[in-house]
Image (cartoon, rainbow, N blue to C red; front, side, top):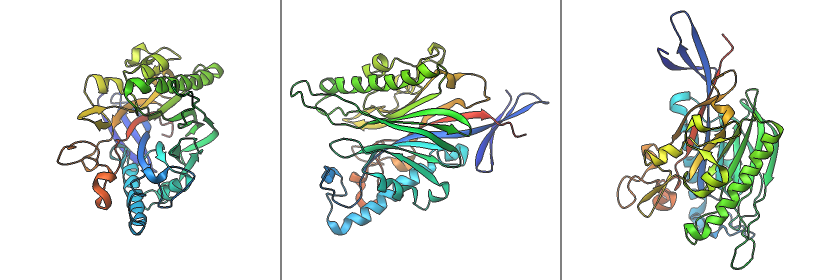
Length: 353
């Protein structure tokens, strides 16, 4: 392979690969991403949920509307930028978490920097006690949903025997430019009360996620499945390695196995998506099944994974220098989320020559 370059054709990026002087192949490329939007709540007090936890609701009523509009602009800017440097397009599909309701998503995709992308929305209300949900946004020209479902996580506190209400797992099956793929969007239970004490909740979430994947693979062992989200665990934790049975190396992933391209970024490079108590955690990940690793590029395959941690998303000084710049820290002057987004590139040979 002598060269690799990108060029934009009708809003799609193709990768031009010169195999030799006589042969040239071109590849379409799309970004698939995930972003925890950290408390994307509107400015209206909803008494049916605990939205008082939102920084916007902690402000005076005169400032809430302005803060909400700023939050929308900032979230839209980030989404528009993810993958744009290489693909000249925003993500074809992007999973999001910590959204209050469908209306905040409608407002988000209608922001000026996103409205021309014509994003569709897949969203279900979850039983989470804070009222936060997960959702999938997709460019209608590129991805066509076929089936959607929400999968409830039933877990109970060992000491009280009461149910722990958390986010459902969202499954969307659809066609990315004609290729059938299945996408699961997650936001697993937090580490509230400590990692060890809350571990069983995330292990249970991992088992549910694996059950969804197993069910899809029972119908088609070659199913192309993406599972993404804020897992509130690192790539090396039990929920990943034991419940999900993830692999860090491509050549160790068997047919029904799951590849985690972020594990080595965490173990070998020390990278993270969120910081806490002077330490990085890599809670946000995108994993996928073995068929995405095949070398036949007649359908979409995995090309690259990364953390979107551009300078404008980080604190520039003080105790949290280098960590994600949160709106709660920056107030009306700016701020984004306490998590960096993550992304993968999928490529497919372009048959239009």
